[in-house]
Amino acid sequence: MSPDVDLTVPLPGRHALRDWLLSLDSRLFEAAAERKWPAAQPVLPRLSRSANHGVLWFATAAAVAASRTPRARRAAARGIASLSLASFAINTVGKRTVRRHRPALDPVPLSRQLKRQPITTSFPSGHAASAAAFATGVALESPAWGAVVAPIAVSVAASRVYTGVHFPSDVVAGAALGACAAFAVRGMVPTRGRIVPPARARAEVPALPDGEGLVMVVNAASGTSDRADALTDFLPGAEVVVCEPADLHVELEKAAARARVLGVCGGDGSVNAGAAVALRHGLPLAVLPGGTLNHFAYDLGVEGPRDLSRAVKQGDAVRVDVGRFRSGATRGIFLNTLSLGVYPELVREREHWAPRIGGWSAGVLAALRVLRADRHPLEAEVNGRTRPLWLLFAGNGTYHRMGIASGRRVDLADGRLDIRIVHGGRRPALRLLAAAVTGPFTRSPAHAAAQVHRLRLSGLTSGTLLAFDGEVTDVEGDLTLEEQPEALTVYRPLTESLITRQSIS
Image (cartoon, rainbow, N blue to C red; front, side):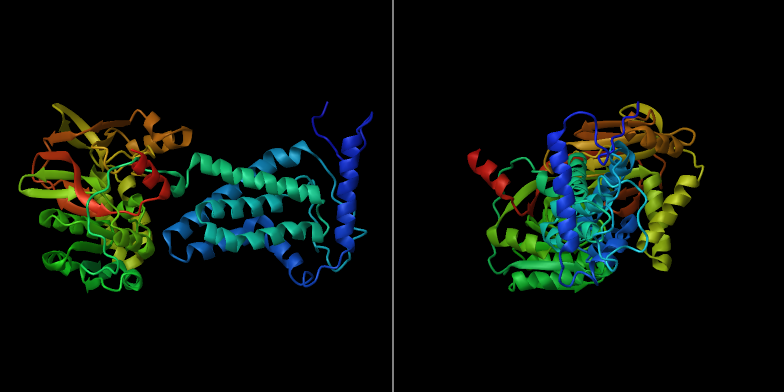
C-alpha cells in the first residue's frame, strides 16, 4: 500500500473538512486568476523564474554580503543555510509525501503563464519554502536586512499563485516549512544576539560623551580606515591617528602618553599590539574591528563604530582575561589563540602569497600546501610526557565550537586556557577530515582537549614557529603559557538583558 496521498482524488467515506478546505483552496485560486493585479504582469512571472534553483537568493545573498559588514555577511550565510535545509526537506519529504496535481491553467490568462511549466508535484511550494527560509534566516541575524528581503520573498511566493503553478495552500505550507527551517538552523547555530555573556561586574572607566580623551590608532594596512572616520561622526572629540604597520607600535606608545582611553583599529594582530601597550600604561582599551577576522572585537560584541561609540559614551566596560607566553627572552600576550605546529606554517605561507594573489586566495593555497606536505610531527614534552604533535591550539578562554580551529567565546573572563591538541602520526589531516564527515572533531582519536590555567611545554627545537593572534614568531626554547584573569579593561556595549542581570546581582 502506497503512503502517498493524492489530494485531488476523493477518498472513500465522508471527509467534510478536507472537502471544504479543497473547495476553498480552489475558489481562492480562481479568484486570484480572475483578479487584475496592477503592475504585476511585467514583474511577477520574471521574479518567479529568477527564483528557480535558488538563483535569486544566491544573488541576493551576494549583494547583502557585499556590504562588508559582519552582521550582513552572517545574515547572508544564515539565509543560504536556511534555504538549503528547506530545499532538502521539500525534495526528500514534502514532495514525496503528498502527491498533489498542479492546478488547471484554464482560469489563468495566457500572458501570466510560465513558458516552462514545472513537472513536480504541487504540494508544498518549493519556491515559497526557499523564499521564506532565506528571508527568515536573514531577519533572525539582521532585522534591518530582513526588512529589505521580505518584500522580495513575499512577491516570489505570490508569483506562484499568480502564474498558476500552485494553489494558495501549497504556498502557505511551503512558507511555513521554510520559516521552520530557518528556526531549526538557529537552534543548531544560535545568532549572536541570542548568546548572552555571563554577568560580570562593570569596570570603572571614564565615560566620554563626545569622545574627548580617546586616541584611536588605525593600522592603514587593514584597508578599513573609513571605520575610524565614521567613529568621529559619533565621537567628534576623539583623535584619530592613521599609521603604517611598521609604525604601529611607536604610534600606540605615543598615543598612550596623552590618552585617557587608548583605541586601536585593525585586525587581531593590531588589537594585540594595542592591548599590550594598554596593559603597560594601565589604560582601558577601545577596540574597533578593521581587519579580516576580528575575533576579539566580535566576541566583545563590537561590530562597528556605532557599537563602540555607545560603550564609550556610556562608560560601559568589562575586565577580560589575557593569555601570556614566554620562551627564552621572548615575551608576549594573546587575546584569542596561540598555536604550534602546522598552523604557524600556514600563516607564514599565507603571508608569502597574499601580496601576489590576495588574502583569501593565499589562505586557501597555503592550507593546501601545508596539509599536503608529509612533514614529521612536532615533538613536545607536555606536563612531563613527550609526545608528537601535529597541531596545538591554546585559546584565551573557552571556545564553544569544538574542533581543531577556534570558534566563538561566550565568556572572556572564565580564567581558563582552552587547549586543543592534534596528535602526530601518519596523515593526521586525513583522520581529522574523516572525523569531520562522521561527527565532531572531538570524536577523533587524533584530537584531545583540556582546560587549564597554566601549561609548560619543553623539548621544543629552537626556531620552531609559534603563531599568536595572527602574528608569527620563533620559539627559543621551553614555552610557558599562563592565563592572567581579568587583566585588561576594555569597552564593551552591554545588552539590555546583561544590564538587567547585573543590576539584579
